[in-house]
Length: 333
Picture 1 (tube, rainbow, N blue to C red):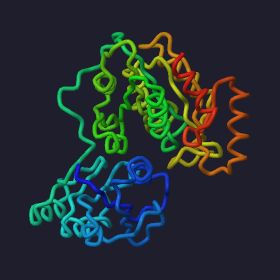
Picture 2: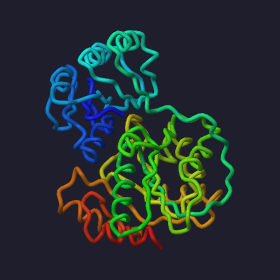
Picture 3: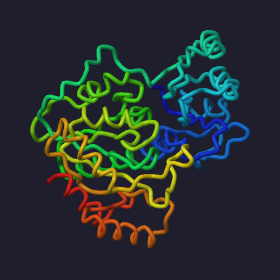
């Protein structure tokens, strides 16, 4: 993918939908020169605000769509800004469900300017149905009580932590942001449902007994819209262990008013019950809390309270410390 990037935030007003932009900023910030926000947008990564021509002058080579709205659509209000980027000499990179080349204005502008339209959310051909057969190697899966609350960050942090201990470990990306960070992966929610488990098997194939794959989770088993994706990923991944990700204080499912966020305990029980179909000895290694909205003191109190309540290692991977080291220890049991 052509980098450095100009991160496109469109007219987004909900920070939870801008997780792609935040993920690129936080994990590969050296590849990001700035952000492009349309009128009405109220979300910022804190990077310099640049128009496409300014970003190109700063060395940007691609405009990366940094938001993932419900349904993965590209609104008509974005088209003029995207065309502006093409005319400024930038390729466009998208992880949306909607394909860039299917939008006549973008297709025409790309042909006129000689720029590329790059769709990351395109599964490879030939995905088989899941076999359910045991395979060698060790696997850790991050799961969640909701979407957009830290499954990717937890998986990346766990991967980094285990690599720091000298272990043979890979991060396996399953969403557009993870793929953009890692440079490879499987866009699991773009796979036809019958083949999701098989896609997960492809993503994390048989490996040496000492090798560890840390697999980025998607959605939530108890999500009213995306539970099916989470189930296929769980059963195809066949994790030995899983880490439950949760954001303290979140009451309702993001984008689904009236649907309460399930408890951590409910997610643990569901993951074990459904994961045993392909991984009979599956276990919960611990809890990852997204405490970004809490003060250090409040975060520490919440981490300690959850650990005491559940009897499981609990940490905020981005805060690190002894609590996170205990979570890593538990992942390796």
